[in-house]
Image (cartoon, rainbow, N blue to C red; front, side):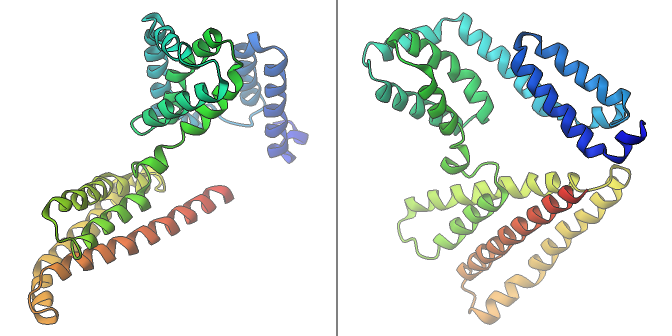
Length: 280
């Protein structure tokens, strides 16, 4: 590596990155060539190795977006955006009303789909509406971008602390619910938490472990899943009988309290991992 670059490695990477963006803005039609030239420059200057470059690629995200681009292309070929735009444009010539329609539709889709995928699907509709209603597309895209991020607020999916808190609310609400049908709502919260418990711990763990010792740590981690289950099965019944005269509802309250504690620890763990990654 060139000595000057070696002493200012981070500054060199940031400078190359900024220049790449600058040239993409100036020569947008050449963006692919600019991107690959930047990658080649980083490799030639030994600012990153080929292995590090390949390891930094989020292949799952890449293929998700690649698949959604196909879906979006099929959506365009089907003429569905034009059909929906005709329906909307026939009812409004106002930017405000069109924005509300787009935002509501985008927010609804974001409950079920990843936000970038939603934008890829809704963008053609927004453009078609702007053409047919003769309105500027920028307000539609701003509203669409904001609404596409509603998935974290409208649902608890994908956020481990929120999912655990949903389970806690589900378990604890059984203590006060007297209408049997309302227990279905409680069970929805428990189901969301159960989905988190089955998958999220492994995702968090694999993201913070050295690949060479993944098997060992996974084995140790499984001990911390099985042992609490054995202990709870062995003594929880006796504890409930001794402390709460056999009222099993208190076991659910203990479970709900444990989920609240787990949510707090998960947030603390996420903060520690982010801090460690920032310092790496």
